[in-house]
Image (cartoon, rainbow over all chains, first blue to last red; front, side):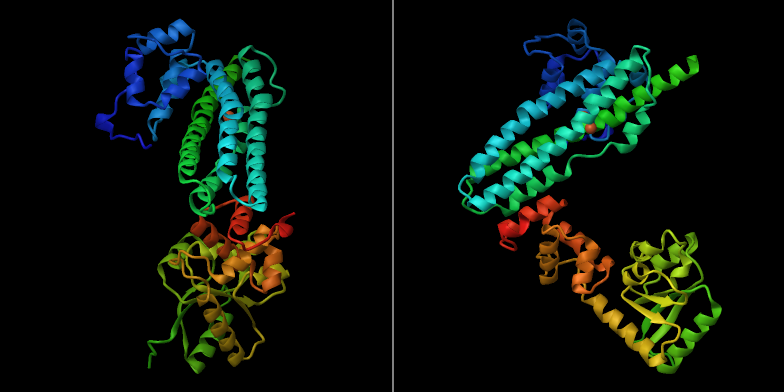
Length: 240
Length: 201
Ligand SMILES: [Fe+2]
Ligand SMILES: [Fe+2]
């Protein structure tokens, strides 16, 4: 799903846009809405109205939607300045639970179903690969949940920094896309032909979706959260 | 009397005396000719490295500082895929020499030097050409080692090849299969019956 359009045809996401039109522009934003706790059935309401109703910071919402919609989106400075990092953290946190509690469980189930006709050794090694992947994702998320997010919250409430800075996150933040990409290649190219084609396709669709979604997730961390928090740190320094 | 079939050699050697010596050996024995001389590794030499399409490079690893010496071969590989032979002028650790396709010593007799250059060229040409999509038999052997958890250095020692060659093979394996992690390559090896489960327990 490549939604990059040329500059002329690109629609600027704005508060006065109807939310339904935004979804029409990029339906993968449906996942974003549910992670932000925005239920469907919003009628003719605009982006601005829906955000206000749900108490969601409008700038953060536009930034997240922008990254999801355009591959080469550059977060505008005024939005970064106006946005509230707490809302970005809230979004990232609920994406984490969404991946671990829903998506990876679903993927594991359908993968198990897919490789059921394979021999025992093949099954065992594929299960092992998948659980290594999940462990990697869990560790990655755990660091953000236990170190990065609490740091942002404490910074927002004027609390202590404990010697941490967002730069440490920025420098060590890795991609977690390698094993998922490997799994995609294995399912697409190397599983034995006893595996059902329809199941195989649906597992592949799922992996492609997750790959793109995790990629956007990482972009939101790197290109929205990090610059927002850096600004906050600088602001705090100036006040001291 | 210029022989057009002679192999083009680029020298990366700071010592003028060494350069003269090698030119002398070449003009006596033919087959190779000096196409260019660099006395160091700088920005401008990088450009020349890239643009000169040499068949073979002879380098004195003293042009690299101590820290970058062990990865000198891969540094060169970023600019050219010529065969690279090291010229040993001073004592260095084994790892420095191992990465090169051959090592010549300043005490080698001229015919020995020529023979080593020939070996380096032919060994280098045996490296798989990047246009094939299937894994070569050497790539399969290396894939099996990787799947079993062996390190690059252990693989290099086992097959008596340079670490650089192992890395090139591994890059090609990943390019062909699309699989990047060791865990993924293990699954690949098992699904393709290159290993059995007992070797990955
Ligand atoms: Fe995250
Ligand atoms: Fe992350």
